[in-house]
Length: 161
Image (cartoon, rainbow, N blue to C red; front, top):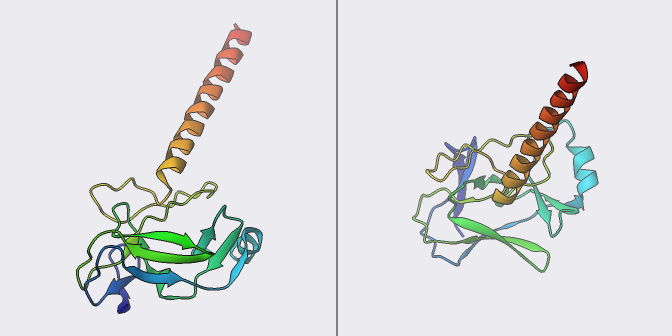
């Protein structure tokens, strides 16, 4: 595959194709050293930027050292990731024109309080790089916490009266 790295409107640098790509084509492989999630959390504790890709259930991650690490997130991507026998492939989900930026939906999860703000600029942008499932889960948790605080406030007010 003919890929180049250059400036991106989404985030600093991005990965672009120099030739048209047909739907279903493997664009790149996400490669690099593998480590446990705990090792990665320790190694990158104070780092604002990482190129980690979680495998299977997220207990093992790939520390990206490849062209694919420059593929940016988009809420309306032209590629998706596939894990096949422990290898991660970025595959085109639509035909991509030569010169286009390669993107996939990061579907982040387990990010603590980090907002992971999305800068893709797409009409379908959800404002975050977290997965749709994670967004729903976070909204439900916030709603439950708000309800809990309201109940505590009501109990305090009732006791004071």
